[in-house]
Length: 527
Ligand code: GAP
Image (cartoon, rainbow, N blue to C red):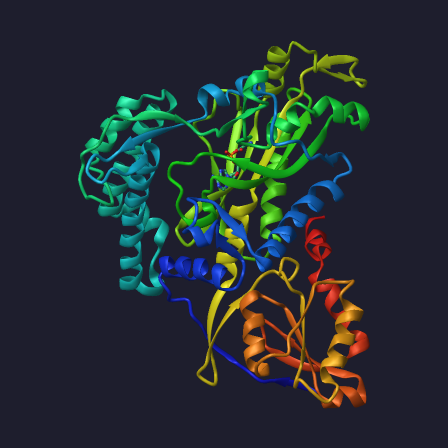
């Protein structure tokens, strides 16, 4: 039997992007994905908790990353270093002296902003204007519209582009030189106003260090100021030789780590996009000096393929190659994802030369060079870093999966079209009614499958309502147990995306579902 009960007649694509974002944030709270931290105390700025569904999705994202690094590469191993580290590490890495944001206050609203963010938003405004011109022309010309040609020749677009380019150049110069006066002057010249007060009554620009610190040990013992790590990478650098020696690793090799990082972000907006406590998945790949750019190219491709394997569409991603590089890097790119608020960085890939290891050698006074048995030389390895934020990845997955549909019967449904391997719940087992032995049969099915994947049992409300709740948390499969099941051992299996329903033997459920919901199904796309 092959039956389709509901038909999708429209996927709502006309929603304004800011509405999509608002809906995703509300959905995260309503369905147990993400809650504001300390909610009953009215929250704590830019700190969030993951709920019962969120933690499962987050763990699946982490597993996908971890396995793609550690299982698929026999020269990559993992570690889990402590959050607290010797404070000199942060001196050596440059974070004590240079991990700063330029801040500016508006005297009227008393609100504080990052000067660089205000300017970046102004650059984005010029780009929006260019896109608006193109959208208007596309409507006018229809199918014959050539966007590329239009963007290169239309006088209005070219005027906006010239303003954008000039601003970008001036901004990059000021930022590189950390010329705070010039940053302020740009804000004044561009007539940027405070979004709250609407005025241009700006203070000077000041530097603000983003690291949180605390005291370790009691004051009587002479307490030591320690920092909450602002990145997990330094835990890898200071352990690289321990891992290399005990793991008998040979260059090229990598060390992967997932863990919390902390930054006292000033502009903490856009939900879990910029948080004060967040999680990173970082991998440092140690290579021979001179081979780093080749490896940089390889990791750039490998990481983009990892993102694309999720199936959200290649057009959702782009590289942003850095033209201006940090003094220690000789190549850097971001993988950006099309969030509802524009293309934004989700992952950074950096060729960090031997800067960090050399600094630790200098500050610790220890020889941490690698002896290469192939060349009989000792040297400080060069490092390619891939660094992705778990929470940003989570947000990108939620935004790409959130979908509103109108069904044939006039009802609408909200469905999270999560990649099945990431879905918090893989299978919902639903007895049609709460009596006649159906709950017992459903429990029996749950008990036989719960060792293989995450199952969820629900008997409350009509079957339609239960399907909708499962759609809303992204459950790829539901099975309904009915009176017929007791006689023939068959259940109705419903698929989330198509809403297709078919009768299948209970004995076949594991083999039908397991392969489609396992992380392996994603990993196989990468090899
Ligand atoms: N070790 C290199 C490093 O930390 P980064 O570009 O500062 O580089 C890497 O951070 C990634 O960490 C970013 O691409 C982003 O996904 C994530 N990230 C950084 N700051 C964050 C914040 N305040 N909230 C959430 N995620 C953040």
